[in-house]
Each structure stands twice: as structure tokens, then as C-alpha cells.
Length: 178
Image 1: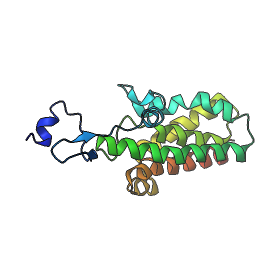
Image 2: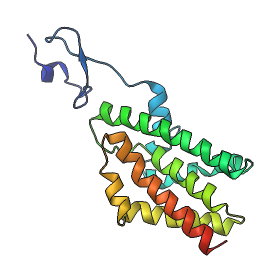
Image 3: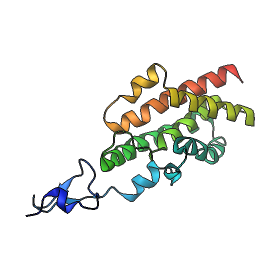
């Protein structure tokens, strides 16, 4: 009988991949495609250079549609996107066997949308300030942002640190620049 390692010569079974069927024949149940599309924000997370920044910038077209809504409704839409992001990020983290896969950028995307919806920037300079401050907080993770990153399950930790950074960014820009 072949071992799991012998059957996984191509490395297609991720760490902790669910196995179904008889113990001698592991079968990997793939993550749903929608989860990969959403978690990578429609492919932005597959950028070979700075996927987090690419994911952040990929949020901007979506923000211009959200900016047409009243602020409470726009924030509600973003929170719904965040809940779906927790779920998709958890699926992909499990599928890849990684607590924070680099291809998952829905956290950056949704969180910068939150920052923009809170700040309500009225100029390109203010939008740029939101993007730059958010990326700095996301990269350096001061204080509570670092603590939020440690939350479990993985999908919650992936999203939570960026949502805290997005909330902080939105408030700073709203009360400082506008």
C-alpha cells in the first residue's frame, strides 16, 4: 500500500488537507473556486510583487461605487464583505496549510475600503493619505493591530489586524486631514 507521501508526489495535498475515502487512498477535497477568487480579490493577490499593496489599490474602483451610498450603508456593505472575507480566508488558509497565505489580500482590500468609508476623502490627496497610512499600519502593525493578528481561527486573524488598521486609518484621516 502506498503512503500518503508517495501518493502526494506532486505536492498537491496541502498540510492538514482533509482526506476522504479509505485510509489507504487519500483524496484532497479542493477549496471552492469562489473562495480563491474572493480571497485573492479576483487575482490581485497573485501579484509577484507586493500583493498586499496591489490588493489595497484594487479596492479603489470598488470605493468609488461605495462612495455613492450614504456612509452608514457603505460601512454596512464593507462589514458584510469583511464577514465573507473571514470565511474565504479561513478556507484558503486551511487549503494551503498556512495561517496567513500571502495570496490572500481580501483583508487589505476590505480594510482599506473601511478606512475610506470612515474617512470620506474629498480629494485624491486624501485618498492617497488613506492608502499610505493604511499600508504603513498594516506593514508595521503597532499595538492592538499586532494583537488582532493572533486571533484564531486563521481567517479571523487574517482579517482582524487589517480591519483594526483600517479603522485606525479612517479615524486618523477623518479627524486630521478633513
